[in-house]
Image (tube, rainbow, N blue to C red; front, top):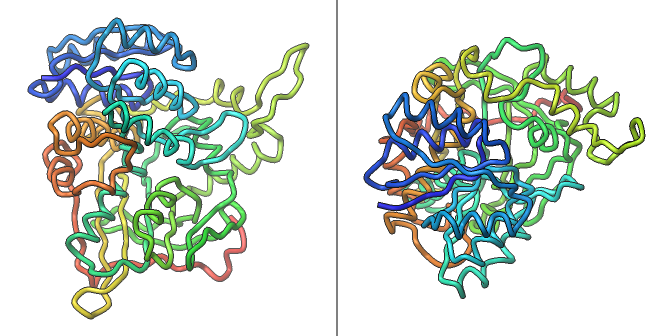
Length: 411
């Protein structure tokens, strides 16, 4: 049995704590740490009520490397699961290197002062982790994470040549709020409003944010939605690790209500990330907006509907062109019954636990800094079925193909 330290007590941290508690044969001891101890206490109480397990609690400012180092010294974990803010990835990685602890996260590093989503900062740590005999697993959520594993599984089992990739993330849930985000508002809005990048013929091409849309019909009666092309970090690693891809795109669904509210907020400057003077101090508008929007972890009980997230790939199989669609459908209310969280947090937190499982059981243990598609997908895919995120391969003849709406010159 291993000891794991979870840093971050938001909606995803809540799911990770519950998921780890449900596998006591691997996660013998669980420590949960956050800047806000009260959040840890609430999660610990719910874990105790649902599973009967006790977890230890700590307070830490993950921006401060010495504090994280001291936390690691005091708790002596085998692995850190980082579900704090993406801004804190490097400080936690630095602390892991200093104390000799394996590392896992669910989102790539983002500098607070600019909306740049790339792995370059973390990939630069590879040699240092190798020399220390430590492993860092990057992006072990759903997208990125499971989508990377789906792609690796398709490349291993379904297609001999992988030509195009479309990652489609549909959230068919309704939380009943006029405007709210299903995960950290600051991160969510930064991603959505950033310029889009997609991979085509050997390079990334940039287009305006949300400028391309397509109708998409989800399988299993989840429904028909409008999906918008945007940049997402797994495109960077997947195009690097599958260099023969001719095109790779990421799509996400948004309601008209969400987009209209977002347009107004942008027009008023509330999505800005540069500090502005206010009453003798400086504030970041987006951080202020985050403070007044509903806390994503509070949405679970009132969120109804399903998510449908998957990978559509096109390529060659035994000399013939073939399309493959591998996906998961997750019900918001079922996720809430299991762990008290809506499906967005659930589909991120469970894969974080599974990534930790792969590392601690030795299935994926290799010194260095890695993305999930660089390992054998089979044990991870098997674990998804066991731990509440079953996947389906759709009949190739029925696979939908996102096509640009010629009339969509803007969102």
